[in-house]
Length: 313
Image (cartoon, rainbow, N blue to C red; front, side, top):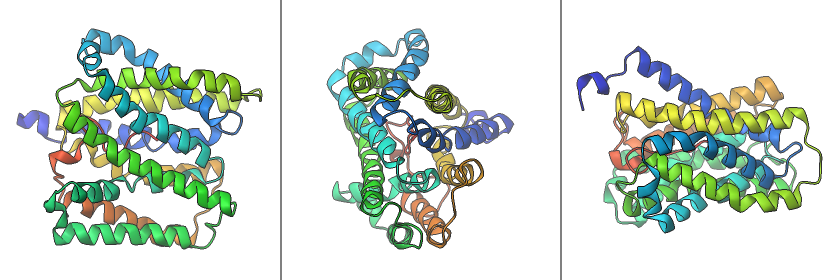
């Protein structure tokens, strides 16, 4: 990679800031969308709109044919990366604050490190990374047990479990790409996955959507599909081209900050003591677990070499 591509110049910082915002916003839009759309309707609308927007780019780059050649694994990736997580997030955000949801999803590197250890990767057992795992999961425990977190009683605990399951799915999907879809264009994989997930959920959405959606929820759903899915992926690809796949995902450590701030400012969500204490523990723990304490995370931490380690909500 040339020095021109590898460095963080002005354009790279603009792309970096755009990604921090674009993938910090989904939790706000999901929260607004599920106010009058069912979770299945949100998933169907988001994925189908995004697939239609990305399709011309995938066709122009001839990215679809290679992905169809591995259609079984592409669909498996879509199920673990999108179909399950998107529905779980929508259901969870009917109960949980959007900022808290965004922070809990940021635990993906912690679960990815655990999966890597179970898969025989001994590099994760380095002291700095083990400290990161301990800090990160301690932060999650503080947040879950903290004051003000018993949101909705049993429903709140279920929602917390759903979001943590999302993090596990997001941590698992990269291994499918790395081992089964290596060399397949990312844009083709994403476009086909989005379309397949959208078509799967469309009849479920039509069957479950009994309420007439509000304009606010509809605007949030469109923004989720256009900005946080289609546009975000295109900007992410541009950032990768600018700084490379190793440093491009560093913006994911800023996403939870954006999610929490948007929840507080726009939705009036409260910042609890548990969140104040647990937030820095989770972010520091994730950074240590993923990078070992450096600003050059291992290339394997990036999904398939060019996909994000923490997807857009």
